[in-house]
Image 1 (cartoon, rainbow, N blue to C red):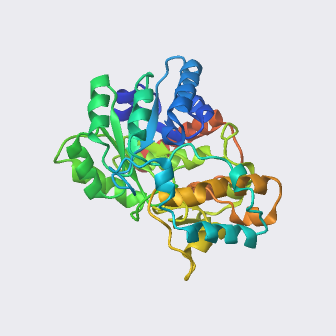
Image 2 (image 1 turned 90 degrees about the horizontal axis):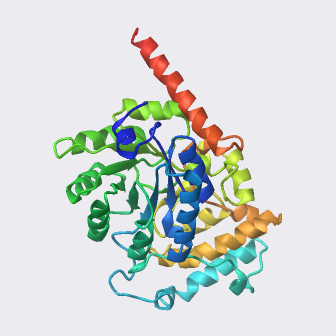
Image 3 (image 1 turned 180 degrees about the horizontal axis):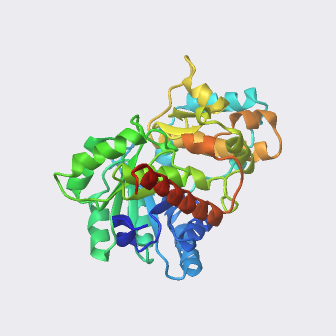
Amino acid sequence: MKTPICDMLGIDLPLLAFSHCRDVVAAVTNAGGFGVLGASSHTPEDLEHELAWIDEQVDGKPYGADLVIPEKFEGKGQRLTAEELAARVPTGHHAFVDGLLKEHGLETGGRDRWPAMANVPADGIGEKLLDVALRHPIKLIANALGVPPRYMIDRAKEAGVPVAALVGAKEHAIKQVRAGVDVLIAQGTEAGGHCGEVTTMVLVPEVVEAIRPIREVPVLAAGGIVTGRQMAAAVALGAAGVWTGSVWLTTEEADTAPYTVQKMLAASSRDTVRSKGRTGKSCRQLKSAWTDAWERPGNPEPLPMPLQSLVSERALRYVDMQAEKGNPGARELATYFVGQGVGLIDRVRSTRDVVYGMAEDFAEAAERLADAMGE
């Protein structure tokens, strides 16, 4: 399997795997794919530690890092402190969350003991994380939620590191190519996390055709892709490979909350929903009492990014802790980012097995296509 992305990144399989878990990133890379660490969930100090660990594990094999530096967020350009950002959250939103937790049998008096957040989007944090990432031998830097800032493109090119960007519409793709990105990730609405409204099947060829008059840029398909046959379909649509995320959440190496893994294994493709109730932007996640509550008429509207994360993230980590202890109300509330491909995931597997299984499934799909063409 050789595509332009394989040549660009020095990999054998056009399979890129996004994960917040370093163990998954290293395991994918060591199995012949390309692991990408979600860097924005780490402080700069933690990211240094995580990337150093990956360096030791992969022994020179290629991997990348992903940042979330939105083009637009509350307080952008105002150099606000974390305390100043927090002060912009209406007290009614915290009261609503407290009421929601109490409604489901959870105590809220120990808020100071809830798990802490590492980062929220704020001026300067993206450049600090980029500083760390470029001190390591990464082979790709990706950015979500808009055109990468100019400093990212310039510094990455100076370091010889390709820049990737996620897009959910063809007009976004055109804007990214004109800005100078090297790889496009066409992420359909089936995807877990932040996504638009266009399906992967439509979006990939739309993006490929839209950028063709400008210049050749490898396009990766993303959104609901958890099998090798879907990877083969993506290549048939004109993609150079795939960008995956959800399929790694239930692997042996993943650090997904244990009860959430159970919910994912039991879920169908219809058990996910696009909701602003976690980050303030539409993102696909497991449907739960939490996502339902933010859609109910009369309840508070989700706040813009990153204020909604200040309302939700610590509370949902507390929910995960209580769900693991067996609290039934917490289990009703528990949710996490995941795509519609979750309906095709029915058991825990090692990361290596998933990579090898996708490679075999890809090959079988290619043989079926060749047979259909009479070759």
